[in-house]
Amino acid sequence: MSKSATAPAPHALRDYALLADGHRGALVGPRGDIGWMCAPRWDSGAVFASLIGGPGWFSVTPTGSFVWGGYYEDGTLIWRSRWVTTDGTIECREALAHPGDPHRAVLLRQLVAVDGPAEVTVNLQMAAGYGEHPLRKVKHDGQGCWTARAADLHLRLTGLPDARTDDSGSHPHLTARLRLEAGERHDLVLEISDQPLDVPQEPGRLWRATEAAWAADVPDLGAVLGRRDARHAYAVLRGMTGPSGGTVAAATTSLPERAEQGRNYDYRFVWIRDQAYIGQAAATAGADALLDGSVRFVTARLLEHGPGLAPAYTTTGGPVPGLRTLDLPGYPGGFDVVGNRVNRQFQLDGFGESLLLLAAAARRDRLDADGWRAAKAAAEAIADRHREKDAGIWELQPDHWTHSRLTCAAGLRAIATAHPASGRGLAAGWEALADRIVAEADRDCLHPTGRWQRSPSEQGVDAALLLPALRGAIPADDPRTRATLDAVLADLAEDHYCYRFRHDQRPLEDAEGAFLLCGFLVTLAHQQQGDTGEALRWFERNRAACGPPGLYAEEFDVAQRQLRGNLPQAFVHALMLETAHRLASGL
Image 1 (cartoon, rainbow, N blue to C red):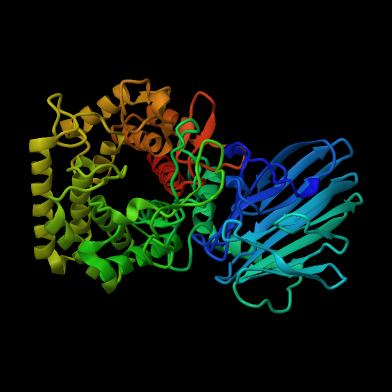
Image 2 (cartoon, rainbow, N blue to C red; image 1 turned 90 degrees about the horizontal axis):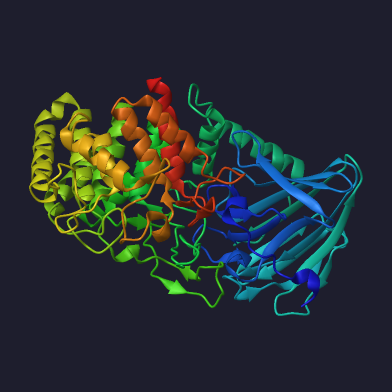
């Protein structure tokens, strides 16, 4: 294979930007390399897989020395890669055309010679199914339009009239050099579809439609702390949310939580718990479109599956495929995993989180008859199953996890309070069930020090146990609430970062990264206790735990200031958005 076909090396996760259109997403690195994208859907096989050591990438890179930077246009997922070279400044404006089409991904890349001339090298190697199906039937019309096939996918690239093909290796690719004079612009449009492609659209029209769609989708958000970051968090969530209302947990698979441990999972699916977090954040922000989508997705799953509700689904509501490996090297420190073992788990707290979501919608007068039927189904499932062991929020071995049980109590109380007066008898029954669940947890999961412990057999501290009090399972002034916060701060917090729980006797940072979700929970817990100053310190510390593109992963390696885990992690953006609004409302 020629030198120009060498796959781009993976970057630190903090340097990747996300492009997304609701149906799929792509990661862009600092060298203008798109090394990860699945098509046509989030959970389809990757067409660009160089991020995890596979074939496939689409790069636009300055030919000489450069210093990288970049930024998102406000309230959008339109990214501008920016390179300062020895001859001038080049920008590459890039996006997935929005609103997205379920069958066709459209990657827009517009080069701009901002200051002085610009010269870039363009390389495209696409291979469907994580590299199993390389390009074939590559054709050129002589005017800059290239077409090809990869398995059942159709490809069309416009804007490269002088490209040449290189089929010397097992995966053919296109390569070209583009030179722009100062102030000149040049458009590249890549289309990937599972249906035959029709007449290509003019790039300017696609850009205008994308700009208009983002302007319509992302609300102003009004008075909020860190408004730009809060709007960005909303844009990320919107870009990761499909027409069903389901939001994928992350855009990627196989990115290790800790590089030296090699832990990784496939998060390109919709977790019920995460969807509830997203909807509650949207309700707090007054963002009804995102709230309605969350309610629609969760309601449909509850009405279809009732007490058999799965922890996670595909974006279309289908079952999550089982775990399997690919014959790829993986991201450094990781493996090559697709699918997820969550499809074999029972997670009790999903019912409680569903009720919290539906109650948030009801308080905004946005819960219809189907939503109330779903709430009844969730409450009945809790009544039937709350004494069963489950995998819990951290998806561990089955146990009577305290967090799961108390979250169900919180959900029951919330939906009972939101229920119309005509159903007070039903609501009273839900309140009584919540009381029984809390009393049972108090008998077998209250630590001798007065705090909640993880389970009857696990006496340790768990940051997730802050959440039930925040959601109303027990009052803010209950001694158990304050004792749990004090224990989390004493045992799991360092320098305003928070870890989930202690794995063993090692220092916290040796076992895993700080968990950003937990950092925002501590923020809200401090606010609940009236300590606004400490809440603000926690908020600012965890808000900054991202890279230049402002994306959050699951974990933050404090010592190395690096992101760990799949990217971007939707529930962290949701809690950041909720926290930004709750803090602002309390100032």
